[in-house]
Amino acid sequence: MKRLLDKKGMKSEIAYNGKEGLDMFSKSVPFYYDFILMDVRMPVMDGLEATRAIRSLRRYDAKTIPIIAMTANVFVGDKDECLASGMNAKMTKPIEPELVFKTLLSFLTKKD
Image (cartoon, rainbow, N blue to C red):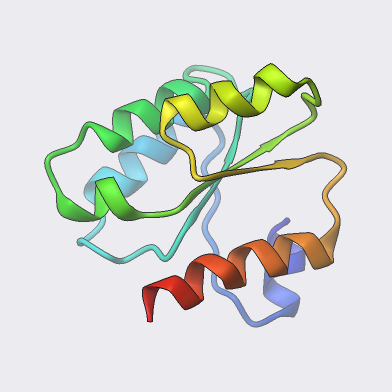
C-alpha cells in the first residue's frame, strides 16, 4: 500500500499494529493526517479497537478523520462491524488500486 501511495505522490507512515497507529495519531498535531487506512486484523490491538480508541480521543480531528478499513473479510456483517466501530468505509483485499484512489479522493474532496 505504501508503494501504491508513493507512486501517486502521497506521503504515508506505517504503523505495524493498532496500538502503534493509535499512538502515532495521538501524538500528532491536530489535522496532521488526512486519512487513516486501517487494517482490521492486526496484532496487539486490532483495527476495530484502534478505531474506537481514536474516535474517543478528546480532539476534534479524532471525530472527523476518515478511517478506511482494509480487510480480507467479505461478509456483509463485516462492513457493518467496521462502520459500527467508527470507520467511514471498507475496502476488501486484495486491494484494487483504482478503487483505493477513488475512495481516498472522495474523502479528500469532502474536506475542501
